[in-house]
Image (tube, rainbow, N blue to C red; front, side, top):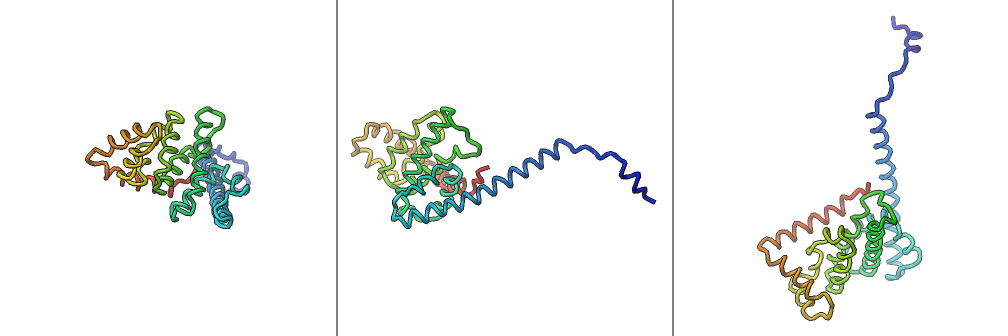
Length: 214
């Protein structure tokens, strides 16, 4: 017969570091998931406030947009909507992502998730807006530091279409118009550029929709 009293006196086996690590990862994952759900609800509220204020950025909206986690959730929602009604909001948020990228580069803030990707995700929404008026904004953002300069490729600059972009730059008085035009033309003169552009579009959309912000 099993000796219960004897069993009680047997020392318990120590918990292995691997088990402790797994528990810590699970706790961290659950915490992030909960934070993301809350951020998603806050992002929905931003859009409700924006719509009810007829496109005006109220102080409540301005305050909520300070959160990089909320901005990530905002991109997920906007990805599934027509973007034209939110053009003002998207452009305002992009300015915040630029400032966030500068602060990260300077070390004045730390990124506790993958929020550094926000500048590219928001830039993709600008691309989808398809306005030539955003080309220079994107070009300036590309040059804020080496990280962004390397990752923000030529694909972002032809949201209005290749020919419309080149025509706009040819007639533009922008200081960098010739440089931007050469950058665009050189890339899209390659035989597979149309395929690469479509692959990039699918990849960016997938990145935004599947980002878990952990």
